[in-house]
Structures are given as C-alpha cells and as structure tokens.
Length: 102
Image 1 (spheres, rainbow, N blue to C red):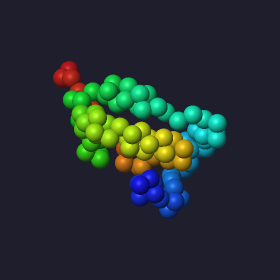
Image 2 (cartoon, rainbow, N blue to C red; image 1 turned 135 degrees about the horizontal axis):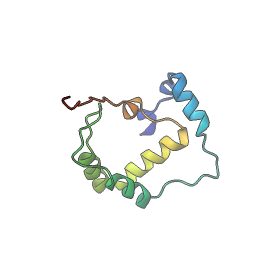
Image 3 (spheres, rainbow, N blue to C red; image 1 turned 45 degrees about the horizontal axis):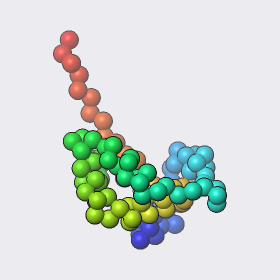
Image 4 (cartoon, rainbow, N blue to C red; image 1 turned 90 degrees about the horizontal axis):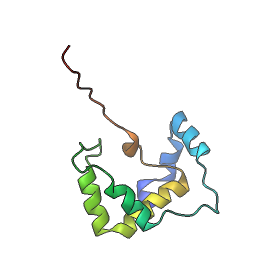
C-alpha cells in the first residue's frame, strides 16, 4: 500500500527543502515505531471543526478513519517516518488571513 502512496519516483521528485528535512530526520534502524496509542492521542488532539487541508481531509474525518482502521493508519504513519517522506499534499497549507478593521 505504501508503494502506491510513496513510490520511489516521488522520492526523487523531492524539493530541496524536503531533501533537507529528510536528511535531518534520518531514522536509524534502532528507532522505535510509534504505537497505536501514540497516534490515537495525536489524532484525537486535532480540532474536528478546523477547515480541511488541500487534500480535503478534516480533523473530524481523520478521527473517524482512525476509529475504523487504527492499525492501518498507524502503519502508514510509521512507514512515512521510516522512509523519511510524507506525501506532498500533507505538507501544503492554504493560509487566509482575516484582518480586523482599523
């Protein structure tokens, strides 16, 4: 499944910034994987009312996904850490400032 999300070709298309981050966070063989409880704790801390990212996934949707397939979501997250690569869509944010009058 991870090869579908993160192919070797997509790793070659990393931006310079992504390459820097990947090198600075290089995981060692003795690094432990995140547990399902750790991933659950992080996901449950998301604000379910926040607007979705460019991928269209809200915090509420992610919470529901984790409740349905916690092992799969934990495995995806751990594999991203192991490979040192996250899908580009997960790292893009659209920020819209709302200014106060005056």
